Length: 193
Length: 249
Image (tube, rainbow over all chains, first blue to last red; front, side, top):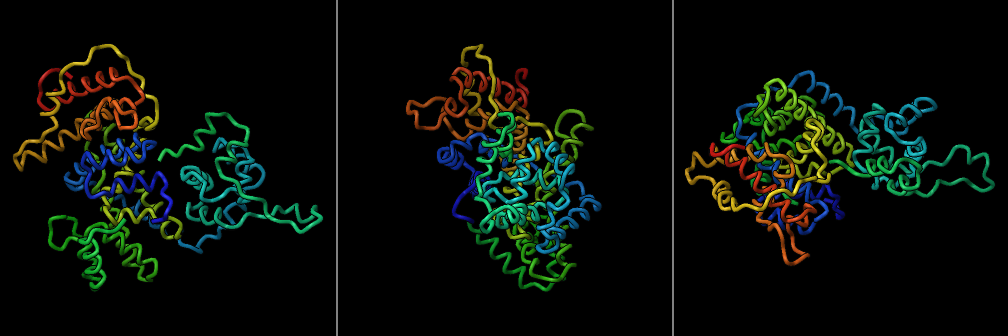
């Protein structure tokens, strides 16, 4: 596990504790009060998992869905999809439509495209939604945003000195600096899962 | 975060098995069977196969693991309400969890995410995290941080004594698991605000604390003690009716 724990890491760590007695839940809630509600939901869900594990055999998996999942899984293999190509099909109207679908200004997507956002600062739900709307594997998108920032193409013709990539900012900073409704900003930054 | 010793042992045993035997053992779903391989072990083998070229083994493990995920999810048959509606919602939850689990497999294969490490520690418990997200989507559950509106109408009652007995399962070995199941499902049927109060009662978190730094329901829920009392009493009445048949919910 990495040294810096995300909220998701903390919740998973609680889920896989060997004992979920009163003391464990209290201890996590004391150490992570900001996750108190999530921890309460999880404590309850852990009891329900036990109920389902003791239930009769589940409905068998749908073979068509299993095939589709397998194909998607194989498509996630490193090198099977060029991450450089992730955004190539997104130009002009396609970019505007994607921005509308995601309810974000185009400048947000442009910053993602040019990798001007520090990759570790993306909320997971944002990348997941973006990958879904773009029709690409999430892993490919992860690979793309982790590459070095792009040098703006026009800079090569305009700059007197050698063009260089811009400084990366956090996703939260990008959202804060972009004009859009406050509720939408909050929704973009709040990871529901 | 380390795998329990029994999981480590299962992994070592499985790694030494011939492939045919491995697939046969991996197909056993009865947790009480002596040949059963835990889901944590199957996941470890699947993650290892990204360095392997045996697609047949790879695909089979993939399917078997999806089956193990399904076993930790709500069944199609409903727990309450209309059968048709319940079937659809349970199915939505299953589809969403399977989708998200597949995403984790993909991210892991890409090398950019290590959340599956948790699933190798305690697989079914880790699935509970995915279940919450899936349920919120399928049932349109309110977000965990949503404000919980509540009326402050009645005085606190003295039904807490009754609750203590309610939460204590019978000592009988056969009845106890059945009671725990009934209690979990009864709590699940409560509205979110009442369910949280009951979950905190079970965790022995006080309603109020003189020390503002200490955990208390009032502090966590951001409401008055009276509101917490009301939620608690309403919940206990409902649970009593569901579990003992006494009173009306």
